[in-house]
Length: 316
Image 1 (tube, rainbow, N blue to C red):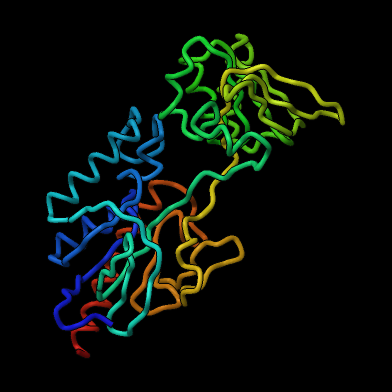
Image 2 (cartoon, rainbow, N blue to C red; image 1 turned 90 degrees about the vertical axis):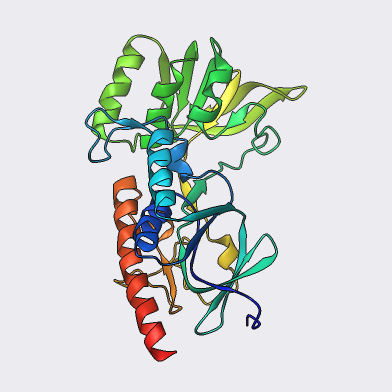
């Protein structure tokens, strides 16, 4: 429990992606004392997405970083406090909650978990060892390092196709390694076909990645397997896009209930199994993994948090 000298915030938000920022716009506008803690990039994964074409209101699309900046600026205009720090634990004290940020206790009446997801790894030899030195998970962040070089993109979903197309701006040629079949939307696959036809991208279907090969710390090839036969695809770099994992590791040992994958279970009010702790966006079980819906969930969570705080005040 907090001692009498410890200030208690109205709301602590863990994360500063679109869902968190949308929630903060609503809460701070209604003078609910709100602080957001972000461990990496304000705007979350949206901020490192090259271009967003399906967010309502931007007919020509918008760069991910630009959308994130708009959301941050709007939230801060109403008084949102954004700080950097990583949550490692949440404790339920009844009327208050304790969030441990970088080893320090932060007390709050309510908590919103909007930590989103992180890139899933493929777990092959060479991946971890060469991370940031030829193995990457963000085309927007690292694609420009590969001007006129060959690349391998691993994955067959929407993000893999989108990022492969983006990387053609820099790379001389891209080999896509797809374990089974494309899971991307028909629209994206049709767009990808143009790059296949002009020779910018070669797709290797029904192909598994076995190893990322290097020479003296420099990526030189990817060893793949197709129809039981191994072969090497020479490359200067590897970009992995095989899905996302929810950022809920810090909830281990807490009373917040998770589903089998690790997403947070919530009720219709987006409240978790612990009263006063809410969740929204990609980290929530049943989320659609779309920025527009994450923003909507942030607004919904904010309204329900306002109601929770109002009831809490009546009983205190």
